[in-house]
Amino acid sequence: MTDTSIIETAATADRPTHVERVQISSAVPDGYRKVINLDGYVGQAVEEPLGDLIKLRASQINGCTYCVDMHSVDLQEGGYPLRKVFAVSAWRESPWFSERERTALELTEAVTLIHQGGVSEALYARAVNEFGEVGFANLILAIGTINIWNRIAIPTHMRPPAL
Image (cartoon, rainbow, N blue to C red; front, side, top):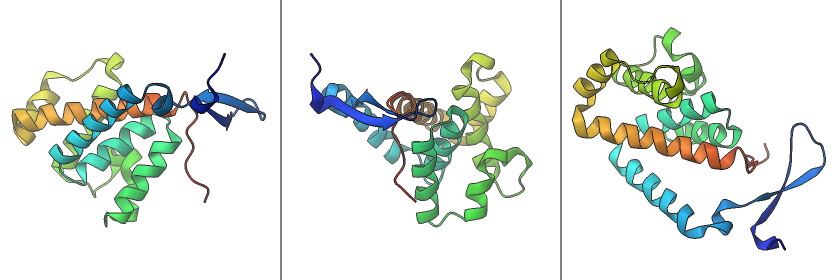
């Protein structure tokens, strides 16, 4: 028997009909609150706009529409230049990102795509030099946290608000 209070209706890309999906927040509220608490911690520990840049880049890599929308809007509402928001997916080619932002974005890619070799010694040294050991540790927690959110949002078909 399914508890309908924990089911969400969402359309899938491959299936135009509605498919019921579990709402993680309702199904396992204690676990969900733990993720919210971790997100709150890293939100305080990682300076802005780096926190939202990390969230946007990881969400782009993971293909999470819900999170890409949320963090693009957060950056824009925080006064981050819109053209720079658009350039996050091509940050390596853009002249607009500081060395600090570049290091955070490169670290985000390396951790999010951990199966492609992980964090090299050179990147590790650069990141620790730029952020310090505590800052580096907080960045790793921030990157891990957005990857958790992406892995909650994508399989449950969370969608951004209508335009």
